[in-house]
Image (tube, rainbow, N blue to C red; front, side, top):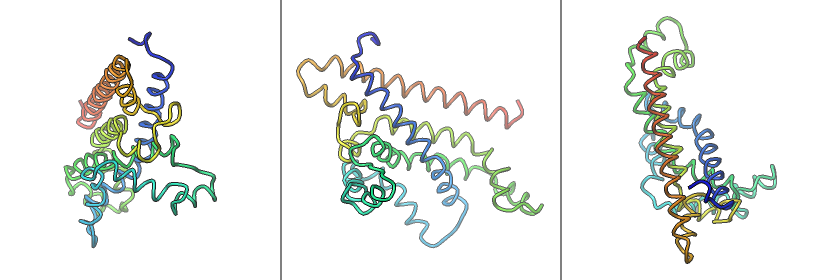
Length: 232
């Protein structure tokens, strides 16, 4: 199967892996912080923040992509600022695809990590605080190690969601071969041309294989982390 792949298909696979990896790694620190904030801190408007975080799950992806285009496009306020100040162009570029994928996968990342934090006994954190540790030290020494399985699960979910992102991506950055064409958009393109069904099927199988491999790796790492924490 791999011998039959065309250079365009290889490019779509490589770009998808690159975008999904950048989206997952880039959103991970923000996901950990937001998950901890929602799980451990009471503040006015927490329900609103929680709703905003989960909006990409319930909104049509095309709406998310259009909002990104309005905000980060070359005529958008943020897009104009980034281009004029730092020379960064997101619209119709692979970096914009990574941003769209990160936003679409962010709710899954936050939810998995938040559930992991809420499963931690607050008494352990309180005990460390009574011994003189500040909130940052408690988080690094107690909370973070115990939430590692949730971080791994959230990272894989975010990666898989980014790998399969279509609607927001094609709306914000288009479907440009070699620049923004990912596996999902390439599959869509092949289904629209005569004789493209075979290429679409090849990419579909590869996408399933990558996602399944990521799940297996995540499960193995989570089991290993759990065994270490339990001293086995």
